[in-house]
Length: 80
Image (cartoon, rainbow, N blue to C red):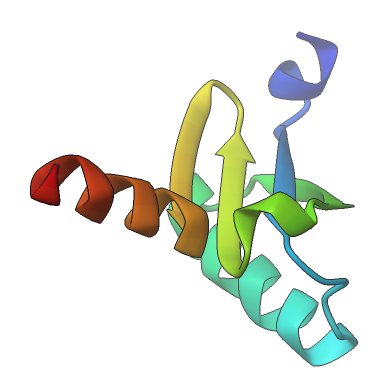
């Protein structure tokens, strides 16, 4: 709550492998454009090989699943 009042937004990036500095900078820049002017993104990262590839992004209470694992699950449900 205190962070929200000070204009800070916490975000967590989950990837199958550790992100390089370039990848992290690219993701951070994209996130800054989504949270609005004057807000600072506090970024943390996690590695979860079970997502197989892609990213999962948690910004506040919003969750975006761009992982390969979720795409495979989605296709499996469609085909089954």
